[in-house]
Image 1 (cartoon, rainbow, N blue to C red):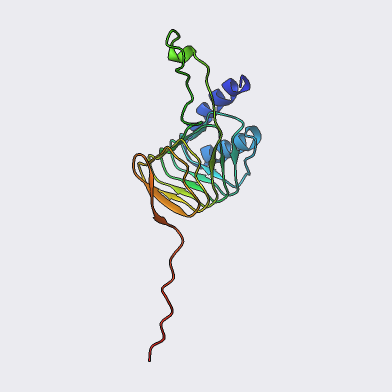
Image 2 (cartoon, rainbow, N blue to C red; image 1 turned 120 degrees about the vertical axis):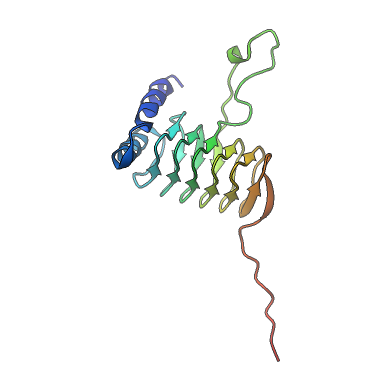
Amino acid sequence: MRRDVWFESHGQALSLVPGKIGSFIRNAYWHLTLQTCPLHCSFSFGTEFTHSQSEVGQRVYTGSHCVIGLCNIGDDTMLADHVHILSGKCQHGTSDPTVRFQDQPQVFTRIQVGRNCWLGTNTVVMADIGDDCVIGAGSVVTRPVSDNSVAVGNPARIIRTTVPTRPPNFVSS
């Protein structure tokens, strides 16, 4: 993780370059430094990654001021502004009461965000999200969300599916 010190420092500086030029620079930097990141993604102003081992799929879009930890983001996924994808729910150790929290071992978990997902503004993600999901604005994902789900709230709970239901075929007489 030592290489992530320079990775994160450069990424933070580049996240603040405004306009189209900033978008191109960020995309090129993430393309060169992340584990996987195609050139045809869009990373808005203020977006930063904290782990170079993250993977980004095809045509991913992030809004302004997103902070993305250790994760895989699937193809065609969109993150609105201020989305935070943490590196798991238990990043800081708390098991030894004689040691300060910040001095205890850190544990990073890779979060999976499926393909074709939409994460609303101010969403916090601490668990995996399946394919074809919508996560409502302001939601906090603390448990895995299954494929084809709409989840909202704090903690996020599934309220419906993204797969439309078909009405029964009625034959009129």
